[in-house]
Image (cartoon, helix red, strand yellow):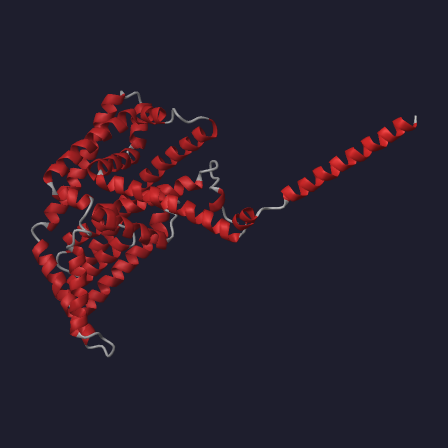
Length: 387
């Protein structure tokens, strides 16, 4: 009996010792090592975030470089997508009335060609014969403004003004400003190739757009599939609403400013109104440039008072458009801050020239629209939600 008792005590003490040893190892293993402490603190978090940002920037740069290298393909695809999104309501209306897909596609495609050809003819007819007069009067007006600036007490000297003017001219005529899409349009072969490709792709987007999108969605399933569908629907609705709204706003701006120029008896009113319509597709900057050109022409032709009145007309039309017309026609399509628009315009101009400036803002609007439906209909991504 005593032997059994001693054996039981020894067994109990051994078990306690094993348990204590295991607990000691557990406590030691729970303590973070030196490396874990370093990477678990703020420095490790900063390094991890920096590495993630570097990877994202490298991938973004590679994508931008690839798109820039394939401008002849990328630009027609983007234009075809924009036109298809713009006229998608017309295609739905024709299909709802029993029109065959092929016939509806041909009708819409011919309508697009007629509209674009009409706009191009209007621009050429209004500007071509009077372009020399328009440019010379704008230059004379700019020279008068410089002469007035020289009379100010804080005005820069002639050498500084000449340097600034040369810098602007060098940038506007540099290969950097005219790179990308503008340089591609300058080459006849690339232009024709891109035009033919855009028409062909637009035909298939109009005719088989929903089926093409379903094919693209095949690799997705579950929540990823729902998210991709939301992104696609948001892209089409944003691009269509943006182009339709911008075209309507541009037409109203051109008509309003044109009527004001005619009332003030400013010469070259029709070419200036056409330039207002064209430049209105570049938000913020386009209206400013058109107003400056109209004011310079009025300054040379009718004097300072007429130029001031022209500026007043341009400001009034832009205020009416921004506060009343644009919210009604475009709604929340372009819910972007002015700083974001300016940055998008700068990036688009540097990478794609004038056409890049035109496409930059709708692309930015599409990206922001996708973020707004990332986690569900009307439910933005977590980091983009209001707090």
